[in-house]
Length: 254
Image (tube, rainbow, N blue to C red; front, side):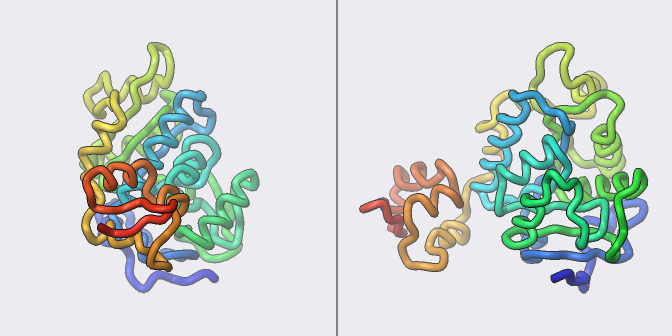
């Protein structure tokens, strides 16, 4: 069911043209959580796909929501990796699943994550609405991560928006001659490089005690598989720290 947000997130007020309204399908509490924006090319290399997914998964394990634009390529990989801790911002109205290749992903996010749009029903994507979509994606996140981009691409417009807003930009380390857009951002001093994902993720903290309590979600002792799906390898770190106990493939607070 499409709902109109009662209030526009404060982070969007910093845009030159903040959206007059936003429509949503899904869990609107995600807007209250920490958020990171990840964007990039629609045709990522295998290396970029793997590292983008790793980044998204590890942010999700910290209960940090990953924001992207539901496009093919890096966007889709980011949503899949972070699922369900993810927000998709659409360049069209929420009654339209675009691009069609991501229809199942978009529908899944409408049920278990959050999908946003500035547009009333029947509005199709245009060149202009993609730019607006990109600005909202950038504005929602604490920082912008670009995992791969061509030099003349829509993703580089997202970088320009982040620079205008004074947001930090991070890019993946790439081989010489590849991802010329992110290489340019580094060369011009507009971005910082990610060379070690674990070290980078560590900058954003650890699971808080409140979030740790979420391990007991929906039932008193979730299965190990359920906990791993929600928090990833952090489960084993918490076990070593003595904060949780794994017994008979069940997880409980220690």
